[in-house]
Length: 323
Ligand code: 5GP
Ligand code: MN
Ligand code: MN
Image (tube, rainbow, N blue to C red):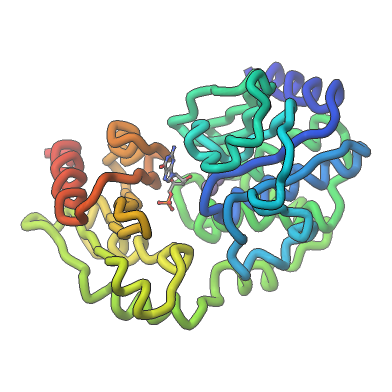
């Protein structure tokens, strides 16, 4: 149960030292917020640790306290035996950072994805949690560690982004209670929301303008999707992270149950981001296609070309629509 998992996570931290913290590829607000929040917890306990990510983090997250402690995979020159994975549903999500694990490394797996396969030696997996940052808050509270302003900024950012600004179905009394506690610790809700939700880069907006031109829906109006081809990203000088958030427009269409964004990656594979409203479990669909996620937000990467990937996903989605 929850208490037992918190105890195991706490033991893992207290009985070890020299950790490597990793999160998922193309980290979002919760990936970075929970990882940096956890780093603050280790800092308070006087533990040594390194933080690795595959590629540079989006500029909008560089305000997160201790984000300067994050190292690129190319800067890590040794392996670690104690790993803490945050916001990762499975080991594939580590990307290239998996190279820094010793063969028999012990992993503490802290996550909230429905499709989490409990890959750790210790697993603090809470499917009820709206964000991994919420689990880190609960862990710090369980361990009796002080949650200062800087740590609170990180955890608040993760909760804010994974609940879509307290709008998604994962928004609960507990979420608001923890958020209130974090504000009490000195977080400025306007500052965080402005940085991570309201402010868009110029290329992000160009991408919305161009991407919306590809918006289509099926005959019944239950599924809407968009396609972002590599040419478009290259032409706009946009990065992969600039496409984040675009999928919500497909989901926004009145009457639509499933919204999808297909994005062609640099290596020719196709990333599908799936969002649903009430009925369709897109986490299961993504899982069946080699990815994973939550019931209402999930993703997977498919072989190209784009048209083939689109057809493959649409077929699965149509099969799962309630009749
Ligand atoms: P997004 O579509 O924004 O990339 O991701 C939506 C949700 O699904 C996030 O919670 C993300 O962590 C998860 N997700 C996206 N792609 C994958 C994937 O390839 N594998 C797994 N396990 N989860 C994914
Ligand atoms: Mn995430
Ligand atoms: Mn998350």
